[in-house]
Image 1 (tube, one colour):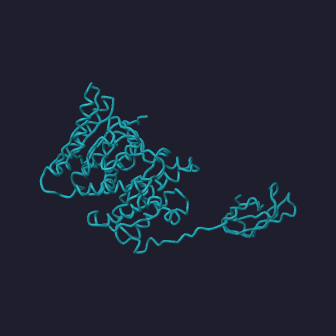
Image 2: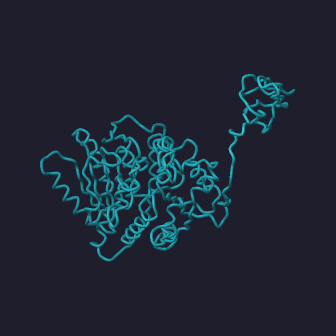
Image 3: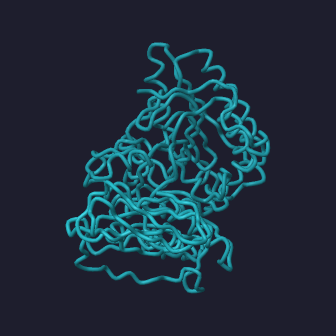
Length: 455
């Protein structure tokens, strides 16, 4: 109950409260505890001390059955993340279940060591465990996105060196699914590092206030085990080794290969999507970048799909730097047939996927089969050993043609010109900033045609 503040105190008589033993009242505002007079169980009596502010009162039945007994405590040691020794510029946030792999491997530590090496970028890479961040930055509330968001806000404020990248290692589950299925035993294995909101957004973990612009470059690898991370780390090393300049044009020519792919059944929509990509193709083909762009457009002409599939396979096997898809999609399906990564042979020459469609980046589905099978396009290509892709940029919910077209235009301008050589996280951060600046920042969904997901 809530009561107005009274300078002279307040005498209460409460009828109809079922109790055994001595009823206890708590004033949540002042922290005071009152034991009531229950000599007449039908009419509980208590005097409240004077208060200036309004009082928020809770009355409790102190029967033994209502009191939870704590049999033991778990020791939690406070970590001062603002201390110099705990500061870094490449922040790796992970879960204890991923720390160890098969054969005594320590994949998270191996990833940290690689990123700290010259080959991995010479970062000051540090590891932060989500359970500790939850206790210190989210009031101990499991699954709260404040664990990451508040930690990053602190790091931006306190760390001596600007944060260059934030890398989340571990799968997450979107908010509503996590709450509805909280009692499911499998949830703990799938909901390792929380994302933000519904639709799910890791970008908002790195933002502040009501802004949607990330203040820290951020990305996630949605592994559920140390062995999956080992597979991905091996691919990252192979990929970055291939990026090292080598003698001869032919050896590095694949780094200029870009695929533009359109997936839709409506000829009007195909024309609209192709129009955007053709305009962006002119940007990326220009002499500052000099890309070689190959177009793949879904067609209903008999036999054309088989021919295109073979052409796509040959190109993927020879090496592709970027694959940009624009069209209908879901987390597990594209309107344009993209084969199982096992059918490709592109060791080291892994493309980055930029997927513009509905839900294709939704790696936050509560899918119980994920324990034994990988179904999303993103995870199938990322965790394919010595094949597939090395990264994906994609949305987690509905996509709108005009917005995605404008976003890709801003991305390509950076990729080909002023942002050449930036990391994916930095490119995304700057693209979002430029997109809002160009659109005025007041509308997320502008008038345009929606790309409905395929079910």
